[in-house]
Amino acid sequence: MAEGERQQPLDSLEEAPPATQNFIIPKKEIHTVPDMGKWKRSQVPVGTAAYADYIGFILTLNEGVKGKKLTFEYKISEAIEKLLALLNTLDRWIDETPPVDQPSRFGNKAYRTWYAKLDEEAENLVATVVPTHLAAAVPEVAVYLKESVGNSTRIDYGTGHEAAFAAFLCCLCKIGVLRVDDQIAIVFKVFNRYLEVMRKLQKTYRMEPAGSQGVWGLDDFQFLPFIWGSSQLIDHPYLEPRHFVDEKAVNENHKDYMFLECILFITEMKTGPFAEHSNQLWNISAVPSWSKVNQGLIRMYKAECLEKFPVIQHFKFGSLLPIHPVTSG
Image (cartoon, rainbow, N blue to C red):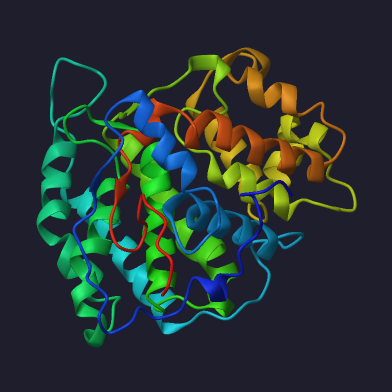
């Protein structure tokens, strides 16, 4: 791996903060294109800084789920159970907030009512997951949860919101709520449940894709499940990248692999030939191996999401994911 791309063990992210840790409300730091330099400098894994910790977290989980089915047996801790209960609450609120009649087909305004409830309750929800001795961290961590479900003004959702949820989980690791033996459950249970809730939001309120590149983007809404989902399929005995455009292969295997679940959702939401509505994915189906797909998607994620101003301008930085490297003295 290249410098700044080194895998960071999850246990290095789970050290509980010192008692003197000053938690702060995360805020935007990337206001202009030149500000991207600050973000890119935080790639260097010296001390702790946002980019290095974030990508280290993504790569650690990528390694953790390698070659494993969603049905693989793994430990489910109390923290994982509490996060699932939190996501179940968000799901229930969708049922309690039906779409309203409006002339516009997309961007149903009932989403704003749903979001207002989350905005009001986010800290209470996060407090159910974080132990009382870490209560001071709750306002900081809750910001990432609120950022992870879409934008209530534009009623849209995209990879920047998805990144906020990954940052939310990364912060929970950094304060020691999630631990190294939770890593498979973080992806297979928590992130997968988050995806289900986001898909329900997208369908219920007809949310617009945020900053979509149309047919030239990987997907209108998500990116991470393609990375982790391709890692799951590395060294699969018979499923190759060319099979994910085969309807039969997807229908028979989607419950085991996140990548195929994503493909199924796309085909349910879009009409017409796959090569036309999802050209980038169609091109990926020609790659010879899942390991090459996985490596290519990590590079693409950095280039198209983490190094793009329109995405990172919305990212918020606090004490757990700081924009300036922090070295322990």
